[in-house]
Length: 487
Image (tube, rainbow, N blue to C red; front, side, top):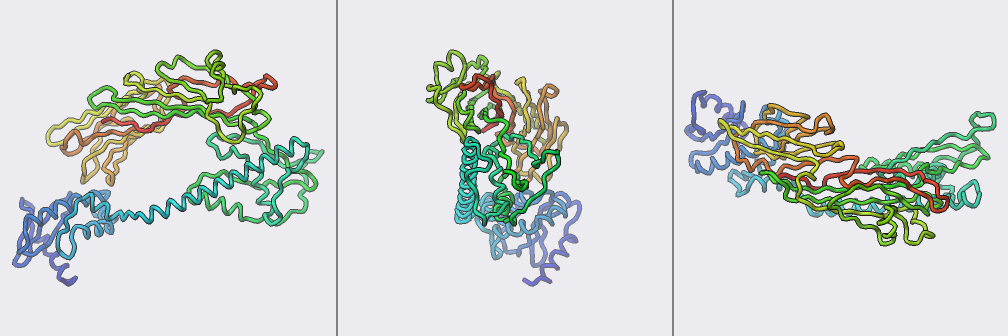
């Protein structure tokens, strides 16, 4: 069929349909137009009169499901933006004028063009990238250890020095502490060396700067890796480069994962909390220590210590220390010293209760969702995802506490609240969609995080076993969801 013939058939279609007609097809002498209104547009299938009308209607229904799945809005602008995706999807349904035996899910899979070879290739690239990052971190740890040995021996310059081909830019990598790659940031004060009069010392002769190391870090940042900035610090001629010593020689991370399954009719089907405390010694001189903790009742929590931790000391004094006080904690890498676990179906233990009430009225479904925070601490970055049926337009929101967004591709309503604190312990959302079954709106998925944990564990102090004085430490505490649903 020529292009002129197709354009002529399409131009004749608007003249054949009337405003008051209820039919979904129009026949002429040679062709049959099967169509379906989509808001202000029409979805049209043109066939010959000898085709099976039932099969034509089935094709039309499938295409009508595809259009809102790929187009953000059912207007001329939305269809134009998704034109190529719609053409590819339509081509999966109709091939050489005949219908293919496919479903909407199969059309999605075919158009996404998932390739096992591509996934394998990406996995290999990611593995190589992680290996390169790990090698770089190990090298940085070796350099730091060499610096510490040099500092103990009273030498100004570290025992390790890069080859001249690396240049002064590569030398700057030595000033990057190993713990900077961890999740607990530590601030440092850096400055230029000064002379006796307090004026900045003049620069001496410097080698040319090779940018290979910095370009490698830039490429990692461009690929999405979170890398810390590495800045060059010029040293004065004849003066040793200052040794950067972390202000907090000990880092402690308290992390907790929360898994909850709520019943849509009320009650808790399951709730599980898994948490732990990890200790990282960043300065070997402070590695002989003990950690004093303050814990609440923690009813229902099962606490376990590392096998090398003195359990008797922990049970009697709530102090985490090694069984042999003469041995130091390993330096450089985090060590899990305490972990806990709790399982319950007690609704009062759930930090965020979600109730979803779908109801039908007048050909529409009204959905009311409310949340209630039962904790005494703030919940941050709260996101509640409600699945929806395939819609031709965005749902109508009557009332909301927070913000909302409709994802037409995934058919979900995303309700987001930046923070839930004492001022908004409860909130609600009401929206309207065309009438559908109540089961369509489940499961509701919830995500949030917090800077406190459900298990009441706090660090009271970190004490040096050599001097008996407190040791400065960096602390990060976080609670995250790892599966939180209403089913």
